[in-house]
Length: 76
Image: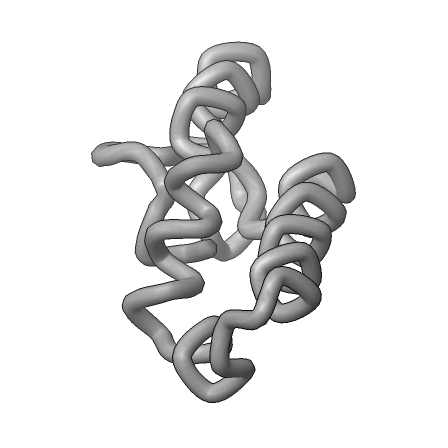
Protein backbone atom coordinates (compact mmCIF):
# COMPACT_ATOMS: atom_id res chain seq x y z
CA UNK A 1 0.00 0.00 0.00
CA UNK A 2 2.93 2.33 0.63
CA UNK A 3 4.07 1.82 -2.97
CA UNK A 4 0.66 2.93 -4.21
CA UNK A 5 0.55 6.21 -2.28
CA UNK A 6 0.19 9.31 -4.46
CA UNK A 7 3.30 11.27 -5.40
CA UNK A 8 4.20 13.86 -2.73
CA UNK A 9 1.90 12.19 -0.17
CA UNK A 10 2.19 14.08 3.11
CA UNK A 11 -0.43 12.40 5.27
CA UNK A 12 0.01 9.74 7.93
CA UNK A 13 1.27 6.30 6.96
CA UNK A 14 -1.88 4.64 8.17
CA UNK A 15 -4.29 2.95 5.83
CA UNK A 16 -8.06 3.28 5.91
CA UNK A 17 -9.87 0.10 6.84
CA UNK A 18 -11.87 0.60 3.63
CA UNK A 19 -8.77 -0.06 1.53
CA UNK A 20 -7.63 -3.00 3.65
CA UNK A 21 -11.08 -4.63 3.59
CA UNK A 22 -11.60 -4.11 -0.15
CA UNK A 23 -8.16 -5.47 -1.02
CA UNK A 24 -8.59 -8.52 1.22
CA UNK A 25 -12.07 -9.18 -0.18
CA UNK A 26 -10.80 -8.94 -3.75
CA UNK A 27 -7.92 -11.34 -3.06
CA UNK A 28 -10.18 -13.85 -1.30
CA UNK A 29 -12.76 -13.72 -4.09
CA UNK A 30 -10.05 -14.41 -6.67
CA UNK A 31 -8.88 -17.43 -4.70
CA UNK A 32 -12.46 -18.64 -4.21
CA UNK A 33 -12.91 -18.28 -7.97
CA UNK A 34 -10.07 -20.71 -8.61
CA UNK A 35 -7.00 -18.48 -8.86
CA UNK A 36 -3.77 -19.92 -7.55
CA UNK A 37 -3.21 -18.50 -4.02
CA UNK A 38 0.52 -18.11 -4.67
CA UNK A 39 -0.25 -15.91 -7.70
CA UNK A 40 -2.84 -13.83 -5.83
CA UNK A 41 -0.42 -13.21 -2.96
CA UNK A 42 2.47 -12.02 -5.16
CA UNK A 43 3.70 -8.43 -4.81
CA UNK A 44 2.61 -7.57 -8.36
CA UNK A 45 -0.86 -8.99 -7.74
CA UNK A 46 -1.25 -7.03 -4.48
CA UNK A 47 -0.18 -3.82 -6.22
CA UNK A 48 -2.84 -4.35 -8.90
CA UNK A 49 -5.45 -5.22 -6.26
CA UNK A 50 -4.67 -2.15 -4.14
CA UNK A 51 -4.61 0.12 -7.20
CA UNK A 52 -7.98 -1.29 -8.28
CA UNK A 53 -9.49 -0.42 -4.91
CA UNK A 54 -9.01 3.30 -5.49
CA UNK A 55 -6.34 3.52 -2.79
CA UNK A 56 -4.33 6.25 -4.50
CA UNK A 57 -7.35 8.52 -5.00
CA UNK A 58 -8.52 7.97 -1.42
CA UNK A 59 -5.09 8.77 0.00
CA UNK A 60 -4.86 11.89 -2.20
CA UNK A 61 -7.99 13.10 -0.41
CA UNK A 62 -6.41 12.26 2.95
CA UNK A 63 -3.30 14.29 2.18
CA UNK A 64 -5.39 17.21 0.93
CA UNK A 65 -7.38 17.28 4.17
CA UNK A 66 -4.68 16.42 6.71
CA UNK A 67 -2.44 19.00 8.37
CA UNK A 68 0.94 19.30 6.71
CA UNK A 69 3.05 17.00 8.86
CA UNK A 70 6.48 15.60 8.24
CA UNK A 71 6.64 11.82 8.39
CA UNK A 72 8.35 12.14 11.78
CA UNK A 73 5.22 13.74 13.17
CA UNK A 74 6.61 17.25 13.73
CA UNK A 75 4.94 20.24 12.10
CA UNK A 76 6.51 21.51 8.88
